[in-house]
Image (cartoon, rainbow, N blue to C red):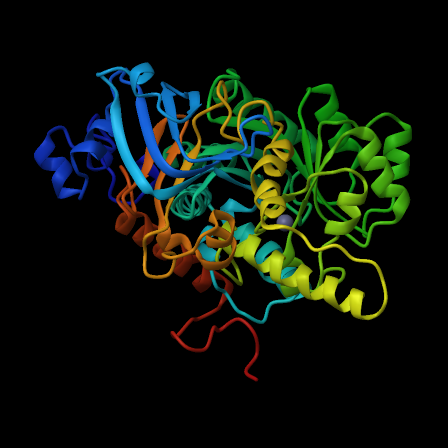
Length: 486
Ligand SMILES: [Zn+2]
């Protein structure tokens, strides 16, 4: 699959430079110590994570000082002790200086635009639509899809995100769709691939659905894997929703006041619990009720809404909560800011506190969000958006071992007495020490494992340069080349 990266061997040696080092010496070259090396090849050994503080988000377990026992893909136990249960053969990870949390879930990310990072800080929604969907998207080749998805997935893993809901609305051909899935698979992240026809309307429903069947057969025949498939929609399309229902697939939809037919879709039985709605800006109360009654999921985009000029300045978190929903959080895309869920959570807390205090000052009723609530959005809520609530989102025995260790001994995280305050007020991705997806180590002691990051960046840079050339844009390092001079 790494044949998408330039310079890859076409013969049997394909991917050789990506393969794991075969000896301890090679491992050391990659900066992986003995424990890291054992974690990369556990050979059936259980893993005992000895964390200082464990935030499980499991209502029965709560927060505790203790350990996490992992066997294969799954969490076996969480609690104090566990050494005897782990046995002498276990790989012991000493992480007493860390906070363990469930892997974060980004509920709505367009991974294919990874290499269009930082096009301009000044994009609003119309400039974004014009640039990304009308100018760049038609020029994407399969290898651009691949490298965008791989880059976005690695950025996510590096920041403690173990699951992304990839909203892939540039499914131009079977080759593009294949490449997108291969990029996600290569990263080793847990991902929901939500495939949608390109926004410019250049691909027919018939062609897209035939190609969807093609990737479904090839990549999604098993339920027992990191990747799952669904449909993506931007407009409340009855055709897409019907196709998804007939194929027993979930739908992720860019939701807002531009979709006025939710009542019609509900009336014909197309609004079910197998839906996740992004943004949910300026929705009428009736639509909130329809979504909640259907048992569907919603995710909120605090930074995206504000940056691109969608809806109000504060995402509809209070509306979601009033309907009894636990929303997910999402970063949307990287054209303006880094896809980073720690930042997303921190931004929402600050924004919502200001909003709530302003309402209180005006004599209205308002409740503040707690840090625990916001972390729950980014984990439990995200898992619900992904249709994976029974597999991920909390550190619960029996669930998949998607775990993040975050150091609380660094200059910027030390001395805090409350794990939630450390997370939501002081942490950034440099404190993300280790990341496990389904029990496999993906980041260890601050570095991604088994990926040649400089090679991925070189491929992303080449892709971006070609695309920018083709649309007639130039970035000189200061002026972004995208919007007219100010
Ligand atoms: Zn979006």
